Length: 382
Image (cartoon, rainbow, N blue to C red; front, side):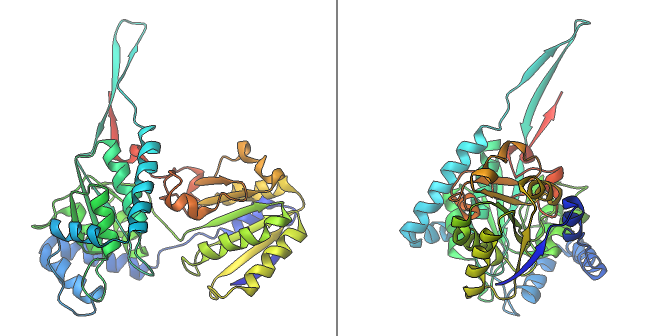
């Protein structure tokens, strides 16, 4: 991984805004997604199958869209015991944290003698999109499906794009079995979102769609948001570390490297008033074997207050505070998807087993949006 060094300058907010350049969806993506949505609306399953053959399986005939129940059971039986144990632990922790967000019915008595009852009800059907790409993401199944189940959703669908072998990854299927998913579909991309929202002969329409994915997936969610509830628009994963402990340089560098594996578009940043700390981070990054296409930005700040101002203006998906001075800033943080405090509070821990949800706002949306929670699957009636 390359490391670029820069000074924060006199205006941390302006520096953050300059780094946080708005990502504009290319017009060809918008047009292509509109074509796909229209085709699924008109042709249903036939369009989904044809697009799966064209875009996912490399021309191979895809198997039936819906995964049979015995395939889930088989995948769970074949799962490595350590993987199964890790997924079960993650599901338990996510379930416990999600349960804290479920509100009961409340009644408000007003001065004129009337009362207003506030009641929350769950969506009937929800879907979790699990992206393909560099690796399978069973943790995304856990974050979405467990949270939906705790919210009270009766029917939960999961979809994931099949690979060149036209199958679905065993780790995804095993996670679906552990999380009690109602149905699983071998489909991905904009056509999967269109099928879930519009409904086809094989895919009943859902009320809510959540989960990360490519720009095509996110654009399909945008174009169909008037028809379905969504969690938000997920961009490249992000990590910003505020650091003032030179001894933690290696651990911070490892976290930056791990997050950089998401791809070269992922911002990975460390900001510190300690030149020695950033030197330590840079030394580890430059000696590491990968990912070479990703650039880590190391920013010298005049002090921790300036570092925090930069972080608040950037509003990262993941914010790590490492070192006594940085950790003391935690109560002042108001703009981050999730905050990790301490040198052992690595982002990967939160992504898997800590219990917090790893479906987080990106692209600066942490200014107004929250992590995936039961509220995405529930609505309030008065």
